[in-house]
Image: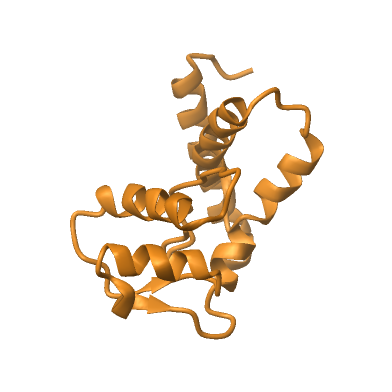
Length: 140
């Protein structure tokens, strides 16, 4: 799921893509929102429709062509990371890594095409300062 600004709040790995797994994912995503969403963009997987029907939000589902591209494209770095590190011992360890990676990715994801070089340097320096504070390391 990706919010309009490009911030990616959640990565969840499931072994299955059935209604129960989709229902668990949707409940987790909606639990922290605080407001009812205007629409929910998903791909055409039938389990999402079934899960949304179960919780009474099927009228909000939007599965139009190419609307899911933004969410799918935001997961491309994660997919690359998964392919490189396929030696996870368990789903739990993969989930732990990808949850942390998602937060770090949002910190350092500077969309270069939207900013000038000077502004990008400022953003990068702020991100590094935040990273040093979070990891309790000094600048090297």
